[in-house]
Amino acid sequence: MKNKILICFMSLMLILSANVQIYAQENTNINESEINTNRNIDLNKPMVALTFDDGPSEQYTPAILDVLEKNNSAATFFILGTEIENNEDILVRMVEGGNQIGNHSYNHKNLTTLSNKDLNEEMSLTDKKINEATKYYTPSIMRPPFGFVNNEFNKKIYKPIVLWSLDTKDWENRDTEIIVNKILDNVKDGDIILMHDIYDSTAKAVEIVVPELINRGYQLVTVSELYEYKNTTTLFNGKVYNKGLTK
Ligand SMILES: [Zn+2]
Image (cartoon, rainbow, N blue to C red; front, side, top):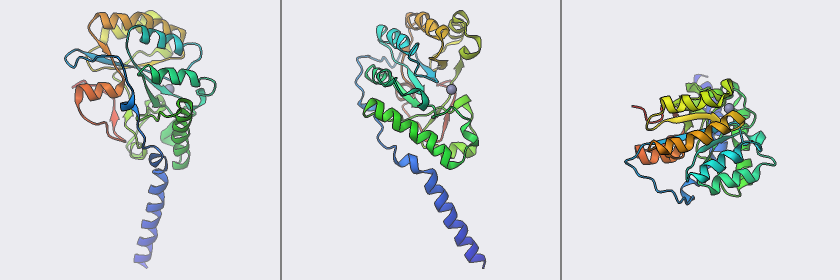
């Protein structure tokens, strides 16, 4: 009897773990390394990664891409599945400009409370839409909505989980000057800076902050580049990265 229960339990675990891994298997073609950029990165100079959540926004993301292009820089965009339709050209522009796209889920729910099935759907559908929009690109990193993580959840995520080390709180203050000062007063080598490309105040802050960071000697790189160039380590699936490169 005991053995039978054990076998039942083990089969159940197998079924459950297979279910959790569904989207991971669909997700093996990582393409960031295929991107050609004209940017020359100096490993000895400081670097930061600007990151933008909740877009793309038809209204503000193109202006942010303009600033990045003009300054020969790149950023990382954690995209929502719901925002992709009719904004496919913005995603193509991101990729062509050497920017990184991350998965920010489909509906911006608290992912830690979802069933395995719903979680898989949030992740895989967003990957699929990004892949279709760009014709080839699949995100290799994710950021959960609200930065909500826990041990149980992290184990189910077959991508590195990237949070941030410098929060502009731009969604709350909606004030260009505060955003600019938060960045320029606190920035240090290796920071991952959190912003949202869905506000006018943020787009205006980017216009000021990008040239000024460059003026101060910073190179603006993607999250993957930041770790690749500075840390020379691989990012691991299900592991949380929330400190940038701060020791
Ligand atoms: Zn978000």
